[in-house]
Image (cartoon, rainbow, N blue to C red):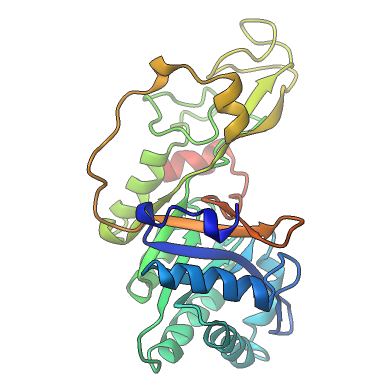
Length: 309
């Protein structure tokens, strides 16, 4: 979807996905098609609508790049490159999407966020600084340690299940856990509510938290050893792992949606941030739009239990 097709009345901010950090502190803007022309088009139309445009740095499997770029040898240049890219393209802020963000990254991540915030604070008007984070694998305590540096922390509450050892069939992005626990560990299955509550319980202000919504889902199939012979419903264990197939939002609506599934619409829209993330351009070089910029790291039942309990 090109920027001209965005309904700006339902969003407050647009995040363009993404430039990728190189291990030497430089930025790769070509891998996701963030050209000068694409940036200009998105920023211009976003500003004409009275909204803010941010540039995302990172994405899935960007950990190694971030680790090298934020090392002592490259840290200063990396921050300068980030701010220079933001300013030269006319963006209103930066979104940090370090994935996966593990406990061992805490020192480098903290230094990056704090020193980036210091440099942004020298700019008028003051740019925004946001983050996309999944917890787990990121400890809630790490999020809390830098929460005051961010304007918004968007939780990646998707890819919360998969055919992993010790798991059960479960939803991609369930709102609640329903009180169900993994038979293998006794820990609660993951959910949006569980992730948000675990982060908030650590002390991160709820007012700074956003929920990342996936516009895709999974269909489970096959496997053996379930109560139905193969994967056919949530919360099934197995002896031979089933498989999952990813479906787009449009495919889900066309194939599976039923009016009875709609439980309610809240009007008017609550105050807060309404985000669209501009992802990889299509063949016509117009940025496409998605609300899920990247995917969270696979977690074990034990890890999930500590985060959701």
